[in-house]
Length: 340
Image (cartoon, rainbow, N blue to C red; front, side, top):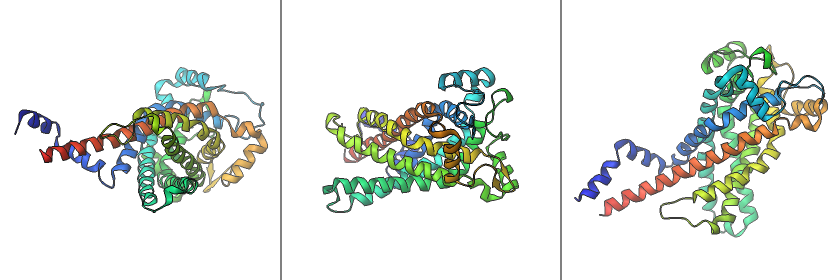
């Protein structure tokens, strides 16, 4: 055995081999999705805190009236840093990571499986509109499944992010000491069912978002693929993934923001005797928001939403594609070694 081969094999530790096997197994997309979503969270949490508070500010108050604590994205960052420091700007980071780990793991895992089923149908690629339509449906199903399972973490995350010092507080204030303390408190007051309060709004939000995000991302990749040649052992060219993820964020924010406002308000509303004080469900919330605040109310926090979604979409897909490429390159290396 040559020295080069020995050194190459020494780089593949038992942990690396186990990780490569995971990435190349049927659970590879699920593992990549979990790591990608939780990693992107580190960048997207600060703008999400601003977004959440902007969406709760002036809740069911006529547009243009009332005092504003937050006047925009940059001012919101400054205000939170001034009163609460970095801890405030990263409110809810733990449940956010838990949520992304569970939700994106299921979402990407389900989508890749459904995509493989879709690709196995003969003649489907000859009908691009039908192919894209099925991709949209499979993306929505994947997102809905992940969102429902992970909903308790999003509930706690939203309540942590809305919780603030008295001087800059907006919306109803929930007070928890940690993620699992929040679960305990909710179960004691509302039962296990309370952990899925607002889940119908979140399912609608992520179902719509996934249908647009994943299908649009895949379609843009197909369109620009001729301009980005792939190298051996690469699932996706990283520059192509970056361009596709960036372009995907624009239509996503426009379509999702009203539903995002609804989800935030359903999760954060005060609960008495197991019932929400303000809203009975997503439609009721959307109707009341539009009636009291107009279209402006439905698009509260849009800039902050984009500042959260663009880096999160970019980070999620780049990390996901990088892990898929790493798994493929590592697998090719192992195959070549076994043939030497």
